[in-house]
Length: 226
Image (cartoon, rainbow, N blue to C red; front, side):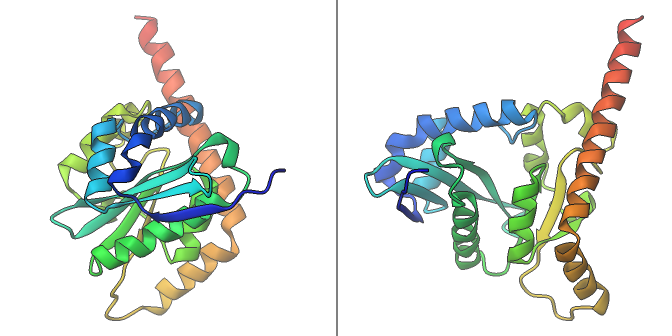
């Protein structure tokens, strides 16, 4: 394995040259996973860079290595760290964890009172989130901003989300709350239990994915008969 050194920092106008590469890689990665966030244009990514709401990773030689950006919903009450992507050649270096931590810090700086949430099917991302203080929650605990949920329309599993009345899907919802006036013992127990049983939770998410996808296939086959 080659040794690389990375520079991870807030993105700016100088990084706009990577926008097309970033969006192309996001799309390819989503297709490979069979799920995905709302498709973003290079112009949208550049806007996030210009607003100071993105983190980028490059090698010391200036090669693009990874990216993530911030979106605010519900008038800033909720914040999502979206579009986490690492270039294929750099996916064995723990770079996703480093980028995730940097975008989390940037989110806390720009939106100190906002709840930070995420939807993911990736066990690796779930583990990183848990290290940052996220816990699994129901979809009802997330933003009700229609623009956020509209973004799910480009995902191949949007039909499943609709069939579940937007209360469940293949993705796992996770939430970080910055200012809990009173942390109940049950909440603390849940956080610790999740960290200790991350492997069990990963198996559960895989089972959920298997069940939901097979239900969808069965439904599609039934419809095709008529």
